[in-house]
Image (cartoon, rainbow, N blue to C red; front, side):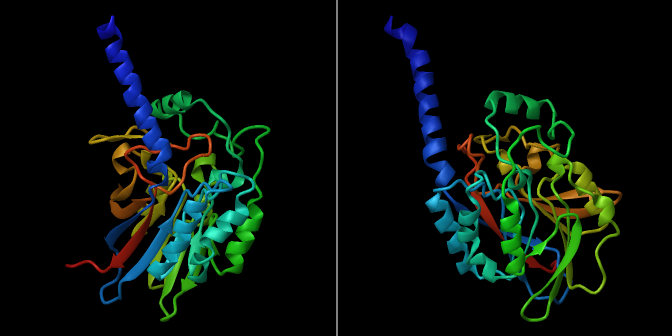
Amino acid sequence: MRARYAVPLGITAVGAAGLAYAAGFEVRSFRLRRVTVPVLPRGMRPLRVLQVSDIHMVSGQRKKQRWLQSLAGLRPDFVVNTGDNLSDKEGVPEVLDALGPLMEFPGAYVFGSNDYYAPRLRNPARYLLEKATGQHGLNGRNDPAVGVERNPWEGMRDAFDAAGWVGLSNTRGRLKLGDGLEIAFTGLDDPHIRRDRYAQVAGGPESGADLSLAVVHAPYLRVLDAFTADRYPLVLAGHTHGGQLCVPFYGALVTNCDLDTARVKGLSTHTAEGHTAYLHVSAGCGTNRYTPVRFACPPEATLLTLVPPRH
């Protein structure tokens, strides 16, 4: 009788231990990743870019707030926020408190669906099935669902703008750094809820800037194809949470978009119409408030050091 129940009890114990680790430790095990990207014109000094993404702030997440505040000690040349700052309609003040020290630096931002709309409680098994079978996006509509509560994102936008951060929702913008270098950006609103309007920003990098970058929340292939064909050297994105629940020594099972799992986080490349761009996808530092777990995919921000190519 003991042998009969030993295996299922053991599996249950391992599962419980894994869940406790994923929900109790790893989800709060914040990391800084460092990446070097050879995209600068020859002779240009290196640039240090801090990318923060998918904060998904819930009121009361003090450790996350303190960690984000501490990132100002990196002294980046500029900050890029790739969206989904909220997972709580009451979270705007805490997002602004957490990012306050970083807002002392030049910055640019896009929003994601969770900035606009409050999260919904969903069956995680259904979520995984939808992503595994390629049912990406939210019903193909601009609005994620009838009756979904909207977040007070306008206050966050106004605070970012007041700090001098450049909003990039289907538009272009520029930052001038302290030493006179000028960085041009082209950004899109969130493709995950079909708010992207590439026709409004098409045409490739602007002339006159020292560097042009592309920024978007969700790295859907249609967007990556468009940016790459227009010859942007680097695309910055978030949204995927790095897969969030990964299998050790295997990787992510889903990406929450049509990007392949091999590129779910970190630095890779993308090719379209004979051109190749670097792509950096942040695994982000938060989770949806209803699925507060991470496994084999710790929360992160990334310090990208942009340099000229060696040859």
